[in-house]
Length: 407
View 1 (cartoon, rainbow, N blue to C red):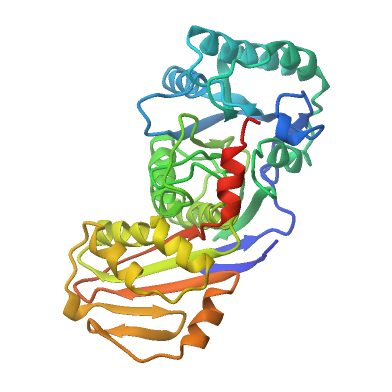
View 2: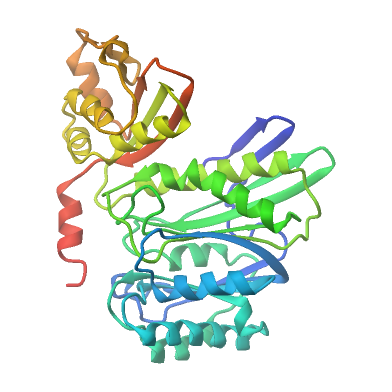
């Protein structure tokens, strides 16, 4: 776990060692093995996140027009409820595309958890991830909910319980000091396949003890997600279950907006990079930074096109210095480009300058491409827009995993 202190404007942002989604004041979590996730064996696959004080909440969901039952239920409740108290989540079964039964089962999950912890069922949100088109095994969930023990140090259990093909849990927390204010933001995320910009098959739960207004919370979340989860790509697919949720219980008091926004963005970027680097079968993290674009939107489009390119991903996996694939990806991104102004670097090595190929040490580039993190830098030299996107290499193991997902 990386930790350290970052200064942004007047705020001191400290990544906490062993930080989790329950690091902020008043949050509890717990999980159990319900036997839902066949890939997990006897590992955790059913979890609850709870706040001792009702929370304002904001969320972003999948852009798919075919949404899973938990997404539909949670969207409805966020519109109708002023505050929420808990979230129940399972892995192994997406509860997607199973008709009316899916909504009924999602509602029952919320009811079971609400009754168990003393929260009105309508104040409980639901999330699921896993195989699509299979009904939830409700008999297993009914038999397992009571085994979940909520604890202040239960964040790690939740982070493990939401994993599907992830190889490790993604979680962190930041403590922020700004003037006389101090607050904490915690987060846990999962996602290893079906990950592409505009959310992906990811679940992310964010908590904070900061006291905030709901309208601001939604805007801050959208801004943070646009700079993080919407800038990663593993395989170009998205799912019906994506959810990024932030819960704010206010137990830490009011905080400056200009301190909360950058802290939330830093936390989301940290988690997004962990997701991208842990793509199914991945061996390397690709970080692509585009500068000099006409505007931010075009910079993001160009950066995402590079990390989304199967040809670029395959070249990185084979440590093949085929830099033309990178230029080709930018060229089809929709961003305005001029070949005569195009600069490209692999690490610190310039391979194209003002559109002209440069002689370079091929063995040095190959060494860079074999590293755990592969930095690509592009300057379009047309404006001030800049953005960074993250992806991973494409390996034969990705095919193995996804050709045997249900078998």
